[in-house]
Amino acid sequence: MDKQTFINKFQLQPLMPNSHKFRFGKPTREAAVLIPIVDVDDELHVVLTQRSKQLKHHAGQISFPGGKVEPSDPSLVFTALREAEEEIGLPMSSVQTIGQLEPYHTISGFNVTPIVGMLTELIEFKVDMGEVASVFIVPLSHFLDQENHIKVDTYHHGYLHQVHFMPYQDYNIWGATAAMLADLVRHIKD
View 1 (tube, rainbow, N blue to C red):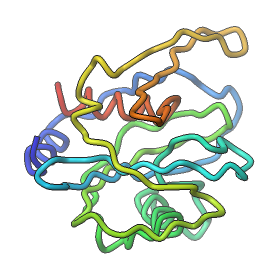
View 2: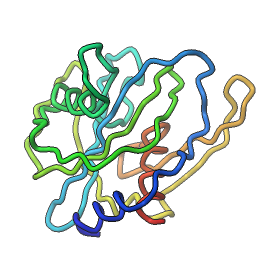
View 3: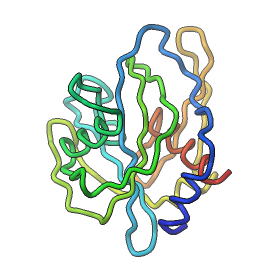
View 4: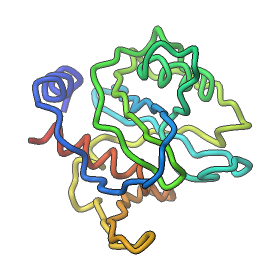
């Protein structure tokens, strides 16, 4: 799928409810992440991060750049772009935002809105080592292949939930990140 086809499919589909049914059950804090898509050698890739092992929440996990909304942030899009610039050195000016997915509740008490953006080019990322251990890209085709989607039933506080997994090479992409990717795929395939 080329860049323009991806943009057309994403923007022409009505936004569907997400497949992640988990609800935190208490008031949540607002957050936003950027799902960065970049064209590398005529193939779309998703940019992901591995979180620093020193972080309080989700240490070492695979995620999108992003974080909590600050009182001075004018919008969720701004939050996602600001956090991506802080975490991986991605200039706001190099991202064309094309839309968002439905928000997700996380087990750590955040209501996370995924913002989808196309990068103008693959840059050399400047990683904030306090937050991010590494940045890597995965071909979008990996996520489009349903063979790479795994769901595991689990119970949390007595409620049944499905946890998503999408392993890639040595990376275990799971939880909300994998659920967001599953919804992105469902959105552009329908």
